[in-house]
Length: 114
Length: 113
Image 1: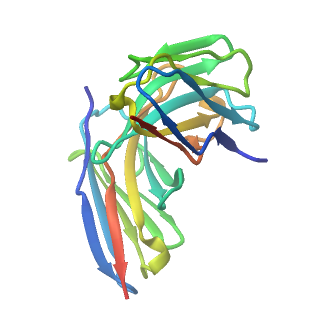
Image 2 (image 1 turned 45 degrees about the horizontal axis):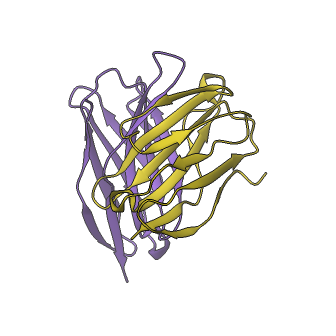
């Protein structure tokens, strides 16, 4: 199994540009989520999904959209990038209550917005 | 909201034991976790403990949970240079179908020869 994969690894955007961060998992996990990691702030939840077709907002959802059309994929869209969105973005998945506790994380996407 | 707090930095000599501490505020937490993040990588689940347990041991790792004080610790025996990383404490509640996770800010552990 590849686990949780994220693309791209690095991205530089200009203010106002849009882009999609890709996330995929091959473990048939129900739950997927997006976090951003900023220095000294730990991980903050952006959006999450409890299954295909179901998404909800986390702690810091503004400026981001998600959709979950399949179990495997959970893309994160930045509609109009701002410098405040410079961060490291992690996608994670977990099996939910039917499986072992804990989340599996992807390697991250390092985003810089100029 | 819930808070998970950790000290930011720990320096330890190779071969010594490391103890990383964490406090949390939500008494309804069901699981508590320790994750490790190496430079440039994602978070790796090290271990977890169910809230009705006091201790869990897994090879060089020992997790202690004091529910009364809402205090969690991770002890790494015989610390090696490969243990240098950021360690995150996290909690989750599974009172509904989604176990939401709350993370601490992370403790940077530096192992010196």
